[in-house]
Amino acid sequence: MRLSTPTPLVLLAAVAMTGCQSGGPRMAGLNPFYQPERTTYVVAAKRMDEIRKLAEKSTGEDTPDQQTIVQDLVKPLEKETDPLVRQATLETAAKFNTTLAGKTLIAGLSDESPFVREAACRLLASRPTAGAVEPLTGVVRQDESFDVRVAAAQALEPNGAKPEQLLALLEDPNPAMQLVGVEAMRNATGKDYGGDVAAYVALARGEAPPAREPTSVAARVPDWVPFF
Image 1 (cartoon, helix red, strand yellow):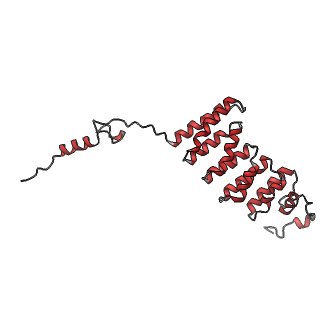
Image 2: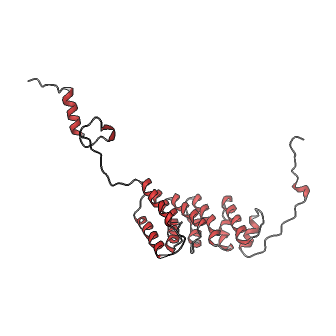
Image 3: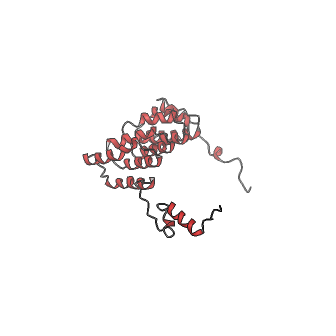
């Protein structure tokens, strides 16, 4: 017995029935059974926007109302898997002047994402927080990301690190870290020894910086002058 071949009209009807509830908005004009899909999923960008809007509620005071806002803000961090959302939460928390907000920034130093850890360091540099020096020092010494270590080093002096606590920066073998240490020591002590790392090392150890030999005018003239 010969089987009949389905006509194009039958095939079209079959396709329409199979996808009666799907196909997306682009199929709406072709599928008479199309219905918009409903979902409660909120994309990360929208969640970040909602989080950042909370910063407008900050008054800069440590009141019960402000504490409640921060508590509601940081509570989802326990289960948040998106590092961008976690970073947005830290950035918003930094706008509030509550104890929990500061603790949240310090907790961000231990985030699994290096980008979040670096953001936490930079936020602490602009928003000094009590108790931040010790964990920042730990980040400087142990973090696997050099960018995070530098950001933590830059946050030490704004958070009140003493000269002896800046010694690790000056003794770091990386010149970039030494440069951060020199700048931090200059700001912390008010002493300007230029880029003389040895002088700042001595100062951090409580010793007298080595005497610097005066530089004559002749010594400052370059050995050659172009176009001559």
